[in-house]
Structures are given as structure tokens and as C-alpha cells.
Length: 413
Image (cartoon, rainbow, N blue to C red; front, side, top):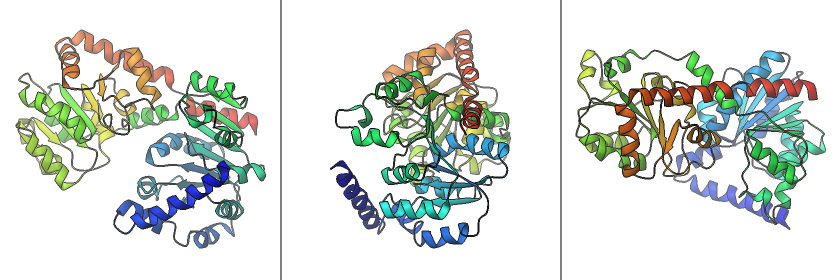
């Protein structure tokens, strides 16, 4: 019965997305990206003679977890060709030209006929799913064809359907994986409790990824000039709720402090809204052309692709998204070792729990909670250094998930 409901739900979801595509850009990309997809797949794979490793990511965040595994696998197995698929346009549209993949496609809707046709066309030798994405028909077809299927950087919580009394249908999907690499021991225990034995703890591959980003960071001279040797607060991937918490307080802050804001969405109306909210002297990065940038208090980032390198100049970070569906990456600032703040919605992110426990990160529900923690860290350089050291120590001890996964795969297959 659950399969019937699932199938109806899949078709209904596809129909609703097609309707939304009439006015919604992202939905339109979802639809047009899948148009004539099987013709494109046949053109790409019918003459292929190489073994294929298929990596699937829901979106851009999962791609960042998959990236070190993709690149590590390619280095260890150069005779393989890499297929990368995305479910969401936010991943595909940004990474459709990813240099380490031989092909990048959208994943067709999860129906029985689509799954069978896709897998028979692509003929993968091994399949990797990053973190999550549990599509019944694809997983069942992979199991039916005895294709090794790996889930990595997975994280599970007690409140998920897998662990409910009605969750047998969802638990069955987990049995389709040949091996599951989880981020933590609590996820391992949950899966053991439902009698899954093909599970091991490897950690979070994103930590390997952000560590590599930090090693290859770009210098951004204008940001260094803007900082002007003053303490710098970086508000990364900021949503309106994050700015509502910070703006009034920061406008009244009289001690030396530079503020760098990277909005979640680079839209003109968003940039204008931030500019109007700040009473301090504000400039956009695109309009800063010389050393006069040092005279400004607020630097507004109006281009994408810079944030991960900008964190190298920070002394404090406030990461956005915590008043909405969930926080953005706190690992990117963490690799540069600084106190990290974020809103209350972080339950899906193990690193947030870990860093709070380590004393390197702070979840705040409102301005009143933010102020005393921030001001104590600002005024006490020794404490700030201790917190920064805790953050960096956490990163160092969590490195190596990619190597563990690749080594285990070589042993298993």
C-alpha cells in the first residue's frame, strides 16, 4: 500500500512542478533540464566502453560532500568514467560543467520505467549517493541488477520515518545499499537497531573539502584593505531573519568593528534593503576600487564564489539560515578558526552540535542572546583565541573521511 501512495506522490510532485514552471524559474529549470533526457543519455552512453561510477547528489550542498570522493575515486581509478546527477537545479545549474565529471545530468523522476531505462542506458559499475536521497525505484533497480550502491556522509535522526512504526517501506530502501558510511556513532546505533549490518562510521567528507578550499584560498586584496587591521564580523549566506537579529545592534556598536555581509541571494532588492537598513557607511564590493574602501564600516558582497575565501579575514562569523530551513555551511569559516554564531534551526547538522559542545560555536535565538556572548569574545582576546583553537582542533580531528571511504570500498570490491 505504501508503494502505491509513494508512486502517486511521485507523479503528483512531477505534475505540480510542471504547473509551477509556468511562473517559477527554478521549477522551469527542473522541467526543461529533463526534456528529452533519455535521448541525451543514449547519445552519451550507447558507445561507451569504460566502466562508469555514478555519483548522485540532491543539490549543491550534497555535491560539496561528494566532491572529495569523486576526485579521490577518479585519482585511484583513472580507467573509470564519472557520471554526476542532480535532482535540484541549484546543484545542476552551478556544476553542470564540473571538470572531474565526464557527464552531468538531471536525474529523471523516480518511476519504475524511468529507473529501469536510466540504469540500463547508463550501465553503472558502482553507484554513490551523497548524504541522502532515497528514491525507491532507482534503489530497487540497482539492487535487482546487483550493482554495488554506496551511501556516504549519511546522518540519521530518531525522528525520521525509517525509525517509526510505519517506516518499513522506508527501511526497505536502506537495505538496497551495499554499504552505508555514516557521519557519527548515533547514526550507526540507529541503523543497527533496525538490523542493518552493512554500516560503518567514516565521518563527514565536507570537512575534507573545506580543508582543501582553505589550503587553496584566493587572496582578496580589497577585503584585506577593508579590514584595515580591525576585528571583522562576517555574516555569511545571510537571510532577512539573520539580519533582523544583527542590524539594530551593529548600527549602535561604537567599538572598532568591520562588518562584511554576503547575502544568501544576490538580488538588487536584497542589496538595497541591506544598504537602507544600515546607518553605518556601507559599500558594495563591486564599487570598491581603491584604498578608500578602508574608510567604510560595512562591505556588502554582491558577487558569488568569494565567501569561502573571504572567511580567511574574519574574526567572528555569523552563518545564515538558522531562522529558516537550516543553517548554511559553518565548516567554511571553521577551517579558518573563529567563533561561529547561527540561529536555532541547526538540528540536521552534526557539525553544529559538535562545535557547540566543543565551545567553538553558539546558537542564538535573538539579539539579547547574541550580545553578551559576542561582547565577551570581543573584549577578551585570550578567550577568543581559546575558542578559535577549539574550532581548529575540531577540524583537524575530523579530517580523513574521504580516505576511509575510498579505502573501505577497495576492500569491499
